[in-house]
Image 1: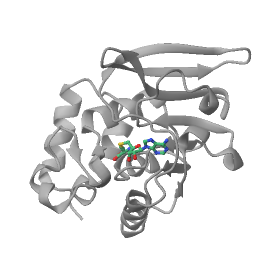
Image 2: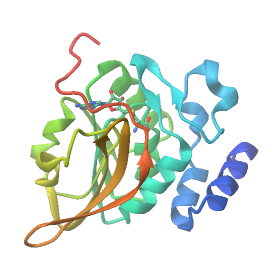
Image 3: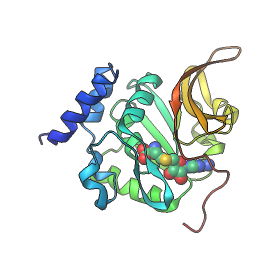
Image 4: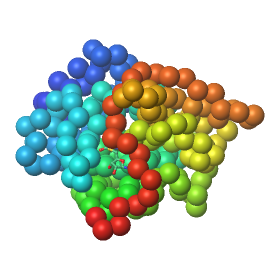
Length: 213
Ligand code: SAH
């Protein structure tokens, strides 16, 4: 099946904006974002912007998805943990590059919708779970990579404990006054090194599971 011409345009936009990893661009090209947005927004599925999804959440801007994926340095040996499944788009992009993606979401509705999309797209290497992402996924730890797609109030230490030595994590972290920095952490044998990449705007990482939804 030929890709939607709009996705080719989007990939050109991302390349122009500094996404240089051809594996990441190819993963974006092979992931139909129109399947991940509510039907009322189909016309905007390939715009380089965040869009609303159910439960008052958002599907991230394609540039941010691409930049976070690139910063994560994923390869096909990696076992990846994602916190915040949302629409499932970021997990679907990662699934093209990683060995397996474990994705945690607190809203049942979002998790179930994302699962349906993964099976439609035959993405069999994504496993989902409905729980509080602050706890990570202890039964599956340690991970080679961790990506947090909701803004943490500070360094997410409980999650970094589930990262292998030599592994990377990327997470938006609140810096106060409405500013969030996308941080990249590397776990070294003795400590954790960190680097601020650029400013972002994510929905907050909430404490606890949304049971009724
Ligand atoms: N990666 C998503 C973007 C999701 S927006 C995508 O590609 O569409 C952030 C998501 O994080 C929301 O769905 C929100 O419900 C979820 N979230 C927020 N706090 C959470 C928590 N403590 N545990 C699990 N998921 C959480």
